[in-house]
Image (cartoon, rainbow, N blue to C red; front, side, top):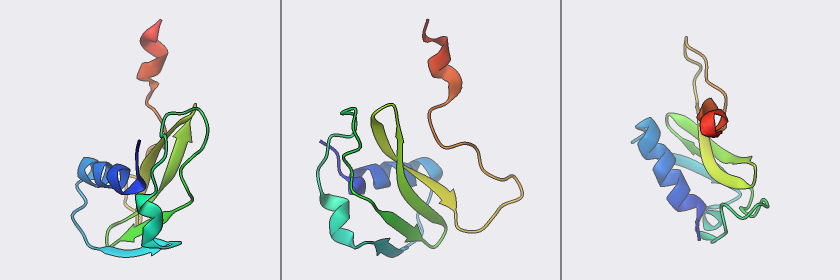
Length: 92
């Protein structure tokens, strides 16, 4: 079972975000609800988390759920697509 809190921490580590959490919507209790992140259906509750540097939100592809993020302030390089990379196309 997964929680948004666990998946949020993984994403924060992946992007190197050590800044403080500014806000959580709808509220922080949503981060601790357990759900099956790979069950084929959207099970995670709606949520948004703002830190000083990034905004975190739910992402889903082919039944898998995870936390994705975007910078709070636009950067000169833009942002890549949210979702799995194209390496899954090489599985044949």
